[in-house]
View 1: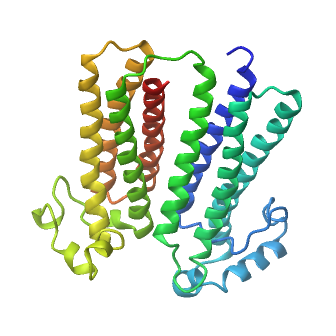
View 2: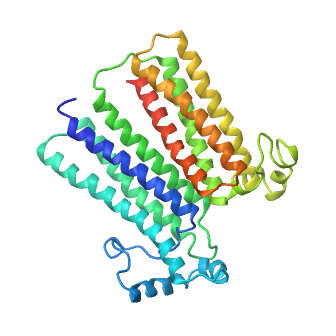
View 3: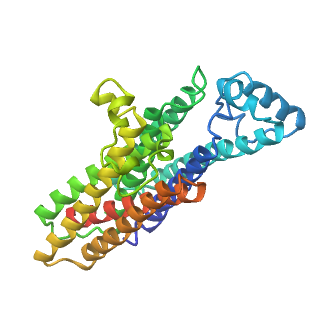
Amino acid sequence: MKKDKSVIIWLLSGCVLVFVMVVVGGITRLTNSGLSMTDWHLVTDTLPPMSEAAWQHAFDEYKKFPEYQKINIHNDFQLDNYKFIYFWEWFHRFIGRIIGLVFIVPFIYFLIKKRIDKATLQKCYILLGMGALQGFFGWFMVKSGLVDNPDVSHFRLSLHLTFAFITFAYTLWVALDLIYPERNQVIIPLKKLARITLVFLLLQIIYGGFVAGLNAGLIHNHWPLMSDGQFFHDSIALEQNSWLLRFTEGKSGVQFVHRTMAYVVVGLILFLYFKSKKYTLSTTQQKGLNALVLIVFLQFTLGVLTLLYSVPLWLGLTHQVVAFFLLTAMTYTLHRFSK
C-alpha cells in the first residue's frame, strides 16, 4: 500500500470532488439555476462574464429561451436575479473542469513514472471514459430544457445524477482495491445479498432523480400514508394512460415508488445486517455493516422530513448528501465482502 499511497490519495481526491460537484449540482437544481447558461464552450466559459456588458449579453441570450419567456418574464426577473442563477450553473461546470484536470494531469504523471499497475491502469481508462460521458450527460440534460419545455427531462436529470453516483462508487472501488491489497474472506451469501441491496439502492437513486425532475416531492406531503389517508392514492391511476407511464412519468406514481422502495432498501440492509450474525466477520466488514445501518436510518428520516416540509432547500440538499454517504457505505461493505 505504501507504494500506491499517492495513487490512492489521487483517487480519493477525485471522490471528494465528485461529491462536491453533486452537492453543487443539487443546489443548482433546487435554486432552478440549471438553464441559466444556454451554451457550452470548453474554454471560453471557464470564467464568468467579467464586465457589465458581458453580463448583459449573457442575460440577453438567456431571454431567448423558454425558461425566461414562459416563467421568469412574469417574475420581474432582472440582471441581478440572473447573476445568482448563473453563478450556480457556472460553478457546477467549473468543478467539472477541475475534476478533469485533477484526473488527467496526475494520471499522465503516474503513467510516465510507471506508478500504476496494469490492473489499475485498465480501471483508470474506464474512469476516464466515465468522466467524459458524464460531461456529455450534463449537456444532454440541459439541452432538453432549452427547446419548448422550460424544464429539463426528468429522465435525463436522473441519468446525469445516477451516473455521477456510479462514477463516484467506481472510483472509490478502485481506491479500495489499492487500500486493501490483501484478500479478505469472501462470504458468498453476504456478497450476493449485498449486490442485490446495491441494485435496489441504485434504483432508489434513479427514482430520487425522477422525483427531483418532476418536482414530485411537492405533492402528497404526508407520511406514512399519501394524501387523504391513502396508501396508494387515486391520483396515481389518473395521471397517465398506462401503468408504465404512471410509474415513470406521473408525479404521484413516481413518488409512490420512491417512498415505497425506501422501505425495501431499509429492509434489505437490515436483513444483510442480521444475516451477517451467522458468520465470523472481519473488523472492516463489521464496520461497513454498522455504517450502513446507521446511515440508512438517517437517510430514511431525512426523506420523511423532506416530504413533510415540501422540500426546503437545506433538507432536499441534505437528503441528497446523505444518499452519497449511504452509497459510500454500501460500496465499502460490498467491497469488504467481495475481496
